[in-house]
Amino acid sequence: MKRLLVVLGAACFVVLLIGAMLDLAPAGIALHAAVSANLPSSGVEHPVTAVLLNFRGYDTLLEIAVLLLALIVILAVGIDSTTDVRPAASPVLQALARLAAPLMIVVAVYLLWAGAFRPGGAFQAGAVLAAAAVLLHLAELLPGWQSPGARLRLGLAGGFLIFLAVGAGLLFQGALLEYPPEQAGWMILLIESGLTVSLGLILAGLFLLLSRDDGDRS
Amino acid sequence: MSAGLLFASVGVILFALGAAGVLLIGHLLRRILAFNVMGSGAFLVLVGLAQRNGIADPVPQAMVLTGIVVAVAATALALALVRRLYALTGKIELPQDDEG
Image 1 (cartoon, one colour):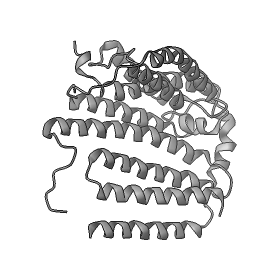
Image 2: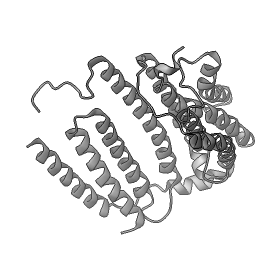
Image 3: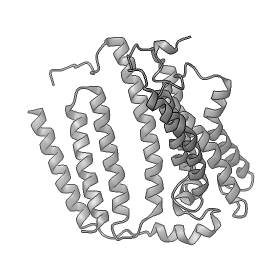
Image 4: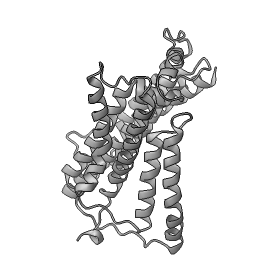
């Protein structure tokens, strides 16, 4: 009975919403025009990066704060080490991981650099870094994390702190996160570099902190 | 129907599938997956609707990029809570207070 109701409700929702979207009036505000008009003063050449780190930098600041918060809550929940039995990593996987990890770091740096003028940026670069860490962990070359030490904590929080410091520094010149057009380029690159390292560590930490097992316990 | 509208329609269907999954599935791991399907549907609607007249809009794209990263963090948090629940109760389902 409940099943039927939910399926019927979902079907009605789909029909109604697609119907509404089909005769939707064109958008009243053309945001892409405003973005391309202000692109020269943003310090980067790619519109998505300009929106992420300049026009809507506030969202990105809160986003990295949310990620950090999620990691802190995971640490606070206190994960019990489990005894999940994983098959031993094959030598082929280990050799591949050894080969791929340095390349992934190079790709991450390239993505970070490319973000200024083509699709790329701190998030993609951070995701590639985290994937490299997860790959190394699955190949049993990198142990799961127990609890972050001082240096790791600094790395995890560093991106957020750099972002916050730049934002607070700009507060003296007017508004929060309103870069002066001449300096916007290197400020965004500085923030993005910090974000890349922190995002990579946080995303890797979400996995590596969760996958501690008895074998890693010291 | 433009490509953007097609994306948005697929997004609506994904959202409804995910929502039905969240309501109907008891197993928490599958429920988290359903929740992620729901989120992907919402992202697809955002990006698709914004480019229904053929011009890509960077603002919703940046918002969706932010949303994807937050969704990953939320999923990891949910998984940590499920593991905690499993360690405490030995079940991967929420306790039922009625016979649903």
